[in-house]
Length: 307
Image (tube, rainbow, N blue to C red; front, side, top):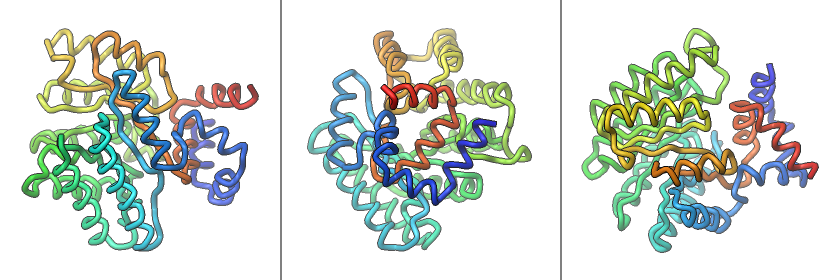
């Protein structure tokens, strides 16, 4: 019930507009969002790097309404890739296709994201662009997009996808991505989806997550296991030990501001860790979906707000 309420709030435009302009809303977001500017995001990335962890930077936004907004979004990512290279940060970037204009002009979105992938491939060292997954209306288009980008000369290993374990189709999608060597970030999923296409019970989502994790770890391709769930982490580490899978052959991924203690514990134990750092003014839908994923975060957030 609470999860459904929070997802509903993430899609409420009047509440979003009010929250993103309010001082209270900005204070609430600061735990999970690294500010509103590129400089704030880069400073957060440097701080996380100093703790022995990599970073994925995400300029928050989705469903732009015109070509100018899409180009402006791409320019932010161009700057991020340039600054990551010049400052020698251990960081890559994550982009949403609707932020690059997919709903406005698919040809433009392909042009913009292709340009970012090319720029990442020219970086020294080579960088990486993760294409984030959005709601189910975009699933097939997003995967087709990643497959097309990956097969272009010079792009292999520079672009990756995201798979959500609550989607019933995900095992088949993973098999197709692995068959051509595409890197995957595995998460549970944070959109409201109908039971015909998505598992509704936590036990089913978790079981599929474990099944997909094992597929990824055995593939020999460098993937990201994105979870804050100790039981999922235990399943992954135990499987890696049993199968003699090297600790540097994959990474765990967690969100900025969530389970910092667990992040640093995994690093101390020799596992690789990447922190997903979002920034920007359009933080409201992101924050609501993070609270929906783990409602315990809501209590944590309110305690810190009143403190």
